[in-house]
Length: 203
Ligand SMILES: NC(=O)c1ccc[n+]([C@@H]2O[C@H](COP(=O)([O-])OP(=O)(O)OC[C@H]3O[C@@H](n4cnc5c(N)ncnc54)[C@H](OP(=O)(O)O)[C@@H]3O)[C@@H](O)[C@H]2O)c1
Image 1 (cartoon, rainbow, N blue to C red):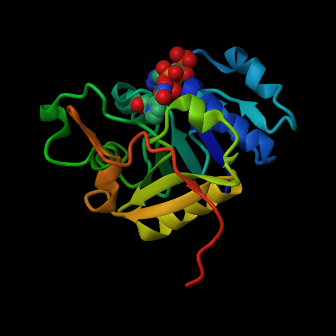
Image 2 (cartoon, rainbow, N blue to C red):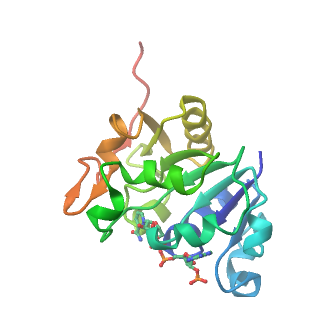
């Protein structure tokens, strides 16, 4: 599977650096074009590859690290999202309730990228903490993963593990995923929780 990150701001560059540290190739794109991404291309290993948005949207797995309000613009840059695995890092801060409707924000993202398999992940930590070494306090920093597609959730959990995190799958957007959801002034109770998994518990 190949990967791209759309957005090179705080979250996009934090994730790009984790790909670089783990020598996993990843493309990255923003609105300003590949020349604006020269610093990330110099990360050790040269695995971070600046691309145009159009080229980055060819990847099998596309990580959305753009403001919630930019999602429609990204979605409209491809005629078809069928078969794509989309990782939603967005939080719907400031998004009016009439835009969200009754759904968790990732359900709205899934409707915005029809045909794709959407997984919410990497959204619950402040960017500086997400950027820091996931090996912390004798364990690995937890990232939460939720999706209405169990296989896609498993795939993204495996990626989070490859990047050095301890993934915890929460299930569907409207079930466990609600703990990661932002809706108006209501924050899911796992948002901003800095958890570290220490060791494995035998079953
Ligand atoms: N910051 C946090 O602590 C934090 C924590 C958890 C989750 N999040 C979520 O993560 C997402 C990104 O946040 P951020 O703080 O990384 O934002 P940011 O620093 O403002 O960066 C946003 C990036 O998105 C790019 N972008 C915007 N519209 C685009 C489009 N149509 N096509 C391609 N690229 C586009 C921008 O491109 P240019 O560089 O060319 O302007 C920029 O690189 C947000 O949805 C936010 O809710 C943020």
